[in-house]
Amino acid sequence: MLTFTYEQLPVRVVFGAGSFDKLADEVSRLGLKRAMVLSTPGQRRLADEAAKRLGVATAGIHAEAVMHVPVETARLARETARRLAADCLVAVGGGSTVGLAKAVALDTGLPIFAVPTTYSGSEMTPIYGLTDNGMKRTGRDRKVLPRVVLYDPALTVGLPAKVSGPSGMNALAHCVEALYAQDGNPITSLMAIEGIRALGRALPVVVKEPLNLEARSKALYGAWLAGSALGNAAMGIHHKLCHTLGGAFNLPHAELHTVILPHAAAYNRDAASEAMRVIAGALGVTDAAQGLYDLAKKLGAPLSLKELGMPEDGIERAAKLATENPYYNPRPVEYAGVKRLLEDAWHGRRPG
Ligand code: NAD
Image (cartoon, rainbow, N blue to C red; front, side, top):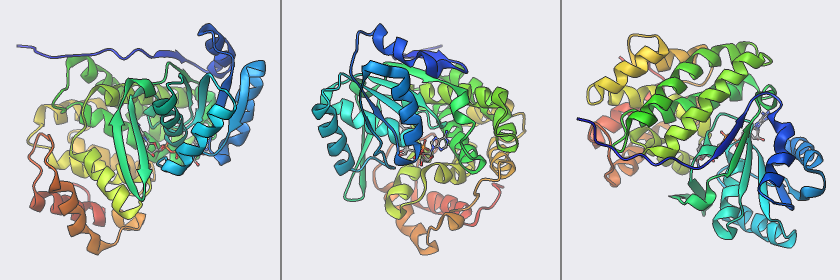
């Protein structure tokens, strides 16, 4: 018998090539007049483009976003928002830029307009993260959930293949874990399955033909679904391990997700057999863990923690850290199993 709780998150989504041009209309629709545009230093030109589209509704540009939102970076962005008397935030970029806008919104309550240019999915979640002294703290707050998301696949064609593949695998990870989440529900599962199907088909084309707008569109659609799934379900061993390893060894976010995902799926293979059957079906393979590994390989993405620069003698410490605080996962999280998982991931072995 079905029993579940599902909370629809109130985000307006505008999807399609050319949606970036609707930015000014979307801002004025909410009666807002002074937008602070955020980006990374590398995407400053895109921030300028956003300001051009906003015209008189631009309060200023703050192109200072960096990975993992250090508290000092967040403080500076909040001060700038106050100095500019901004009444809303426009985040153009990937998870790092959306993350910085969230840090400002957490403190100021300013509404966020997100224009994602990667597949991280952060724009669809009420999850924020802040890094202080190398320790990342995350939380959930409705204040940081963007009001409007403009998905324009034309903005993603410049995302290099070596970034697109891992970024897409990061999105796949949200879908995979949503399918065995403790608070999973049929609606989130529908989004997750469709997200896997879309990403699994589109990503190999995206890395081969980065300018293929049809494939870019499909991948971004999958990323939207993945972000929605992440926003609606609690995550398990995969996200926990990525969080732990990323913080302890300063490893690149999307690549880390890529390496860990097949092994997290293998870890849960028997305990979440129905989810694995569905994931394999959506990918068109017979085994979910092996299918995810083969997909990462096809994308030319990293397959081992060794390649990402994690020291082999860090495995035991990571296994200890990841098993310190108990949390829900279909298969209980225990030291020996996690250590084995990490050894396989360190060497980049195909899940057996
Ligand atoms: P990112 O935002 O750090 O972007 C990676 C690099 O690619 C940056 O230098 C950026 O300037 C560049 N870039 C982005 N889009 C581009 C494009 N279209 N063309 C060319 N270059 C482009 O990476 P990410 O993987 O999107 O985000 C990672 C961060 O997001 C992590 O800190 C992670 O914790 C966070 N995240 C948060 C959530 C959440 O729900 N809160 C979800 C997923 C990820």
